[in-house]
Image 1 (cartoon, rainbow, N blue to C red):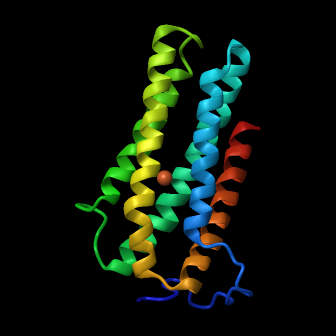
Image 2: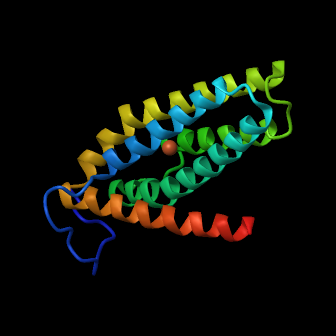
Image 3: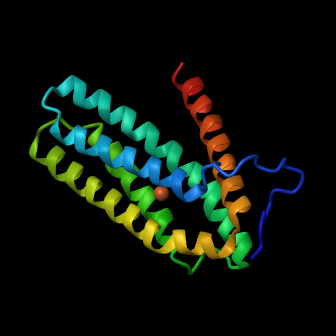
Length: 172
Ligand SMILES: [Fe+2]
């Protein structure tokens, strides 16, 4: 147990109801999958492209926040470099989904290629989520205590907020 790894100086979480990082990630993951499924059902081309932009933005924010906060914290707590661990695959999955989204943005919604790429992206997202829940959640639980898990959720949330601001600034 490494407890509150990386949280030196941070105020302790108050109350027992603080969300832990696994719940927080699960929420993000479920929202992403639901959005991807909604996009598959969208028949209007303009609305499909707008929904794709939104999904892509959310995925980028999720992926970067998860990589910088969660993967790094696990790496530190376990004393293992990410290279050679299953976290490697997580990075690749994040990147593959992002590149599919980028390609989709240049396709005509509803075309054969659009449907094919969207289905593959959706399956990759589902696979990614499944392996994180199966494998990474257990590692998080072994590496951090309750306070550490809540602290990670707080840091993940902060990272997301910062990344969202950056994205808004870029889009403005
Ligand atoms: Fe993820």
